[in-house]
View 1: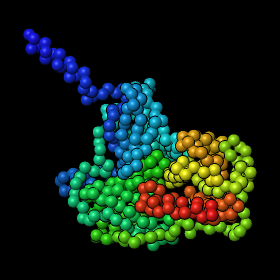
View 2: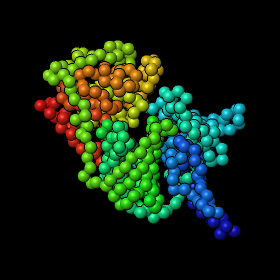
View 3: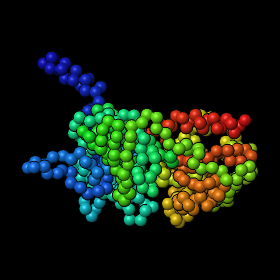
View 4: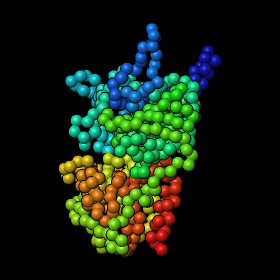
Length: 432
């Protein structure tokens, strides 16, 4: 009996210091999920002779991965995965739909004014991605619990290693042709990287290589990008590019470790020579604000033409915020002039207020108007044109334009490190 008693005591002591493996949860099951935006309805299998086989052409699905993480038994958040990128989302509404008696979820991406809505049942979510500023714009969405692959579980041996730098042309041979650089890292069947254009990059891309075909995707709540490609030989590829459910283009690439595209500091130029730069826009309280205001006297002004709907703009805002935090100075002022996708000023300003608060931006935020490059260019006649959101205008303490930087190649690109060096050098020159 004493041995049984000792065993019971030892068991109690052991279990009291070991955390249970299965934690309780009350809503979505925690762990990895596979999300899919259905941008083009196509069958998942195709008939080959008398057998059905899985396709390696994934053009109908735009997949991404996300993880459900609990902070308590009731509270959880979602983390979207795109390559190295992790996007934490906490604005989530979960409840029971009385009409259907099914669990429902809304995942709000307030930074970009979009959201996912879905019914949850038996480890599957099914619903839509909604873009608020585009009337009637929705894309079917599905989420599958416990699925950690992105495109496929297949492991077909790749016919080439795509790692490295590629010279790329989108819409080759047409009047809409534009150059880009592909920068990829391949490890077996796993592929990551991005495309850099003259006006920015296509975010963190992740995907797969299966035999002579490959696919890459990203979903960051603002953009849904899907790239499909075919390997022609070790140094040449062709492919298609799909953005959301409407825009489709083609591209071709050639391996070139020395590939370059037009410099971001050369695309837009000052049109006023030695004249001073000035403008007037309303702040978020409706007060007219000019560059010549006393508050900006004797300061370097970084005037950023931006939009809350633009992930590259968000990346640049984060860079500027981090730069000021690491290099505190009273002689630099960041002024963001935002152009939004709501035509109603009241809606646009509300989005801007929420965005500024969410990102904790210590900048002067002004409302510029509706997001249209032609109209935006007309509001800044002192520069040659606005080719891209963002556009960053470096203005010295005498209100002279010193440099204009078009677009933003963010942390997903190999050129981001060089941008930081160039930026620091320009600031030093403006102080001298």
